[in-house]
Length: 188
Image (cartoon, rainbow, N blue to C red; front, side, top):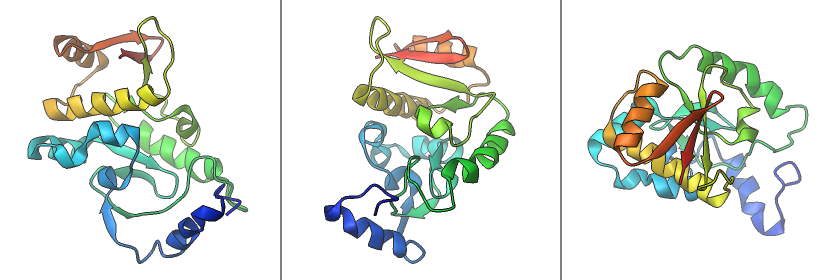
């Protein structure tokens, strides 16, 4: 419980982790919850958008590494900041995740939190930062903005070859997206 930073009322999370090899599974895009996934609304996606998501969205799991949106995974509790004895997550994932991400061709968007980026940087990816008008950083609305942005990309179903194509599409779609120092800045 200490490694997972859990309190007494969350003891069930430890039991769930113990059963991870035999637990029911769901597509990763449905397994994860929270503000980002609420805005993404995978269950409400049209079939074409869901197919696009399954082919293009990769989620960084602290337990499984990189998983595609459609990969079926069990419920578990582990986060980027979990402290496992003799198994630092950064040492476990950093080189493997970075190597896989470096092999990707075309436009790669990195919407992970900075903490997950530390578990495997993507040197050629475009990091997406969400800000309020005026450039103020966001927290809750950062996640919502990222989820809505990914949903808009999936709904459009366009495999953009580069950042310029994405920015042109975003502007035509009414989204405020611009570049800044190898980052894409989305104003919401």
